[in-house]
Amino acid sequence: MLRSCPVTRIARVRRLRFVAMARIESRTVLDRQVLDEILHLIEATTDLDGHRPVGEHKYSHLKVGATGWLGVLARDDEGTLIGYAHTRWGSPGQRPRVAVEVVVHPDARRDGVVATQLLDETRTAVARAGGGLMFLWVHRVEQADQTLAYELGFEIQRELAFMVRPLEERPARAVLAEGIELRPYREGRDDDAFLAVNNAAFAGHPENGGWDADDFAERRSLDWFEPDDLLMAWRGDDLVGFHWTKWHGHESDEVPAHEPVGEVYVLAVAPSAQGLGLGRSLLEIGVEHLWERGCRQVILYVDCASSAALALYESAGFEHRYRDVCYQQWIDAAVEDAAVELRRPS
Image (cartoon, rainbow, N blue to C red; front, side, top):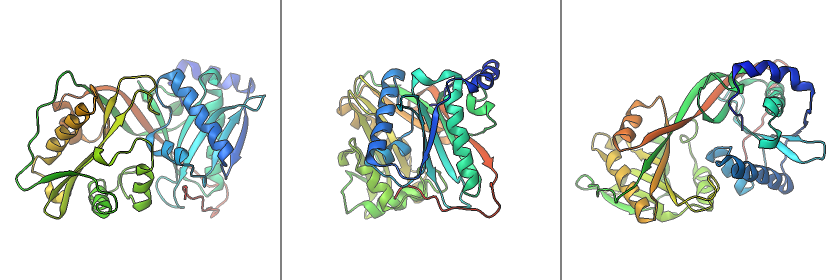
């Protein structure tokens, strides 16, 4: 993970870059052994930092064992993996061309030296692949313009707010509009309807939009998925919205050693059902469902630019805790018309 790095320390970072440099490797194939090393690094960092250093979307690829992308690895003198840059590639001309997250073991952060090496190698790879827009996610940021990423020339693209709602008592029961029925997800029967509503509600969204059957199946293959946690609202045969909740157990992948925590994982309303108050009803129904599962705290991530969603969550008792920031940087091609088809995991 790239940690906040004050401006006054940047000069030290650049002066120290000749000291304790890591050995950098770029791999176009990540076999099972390397994937296990990466997962071990993420788990060790999670234990020490108290939170997982990469986001759900990218972590899911590692967890299910997808292997078809470029990985940038940093090793110490003994060959131990101490850093990793995770890349998710789009096709040439797609925006972004690549989305990146960086994790460095806390004992090897060295004022940003290893993270800078990993990013330098990643930017070189993008340039050799024909260039394009590069996204870089940095987690748990206090000041978006006071990070190593910002000092390395990345611009702020967007910010996600992490919000929390304590559940000290059972939430009030929500009421759905007349003619709308709630039922849990049914595998194989509800997939097409889910994808249609999800993609309509999140059209153009870089993470939640444009899902296909494989994207949906990938999420359902993760250990935490339970069909009963995906609550779907139907009007006759038409799906009009859903609240996909997530239950984090005592030792979840994201947060070690905690009481059960619930998450508003995805909340979506079909464009045809806007104006019925369905989003608020589904939110409260999902929160009550998580209470029944033993959660006494609910969390969520929301785009800070989505004023309507922020207002909904704030009015429902969610409080801001911190932000995750997506930075961007345009990478010029190393050789004109040298676009290479580096695809996302298959």
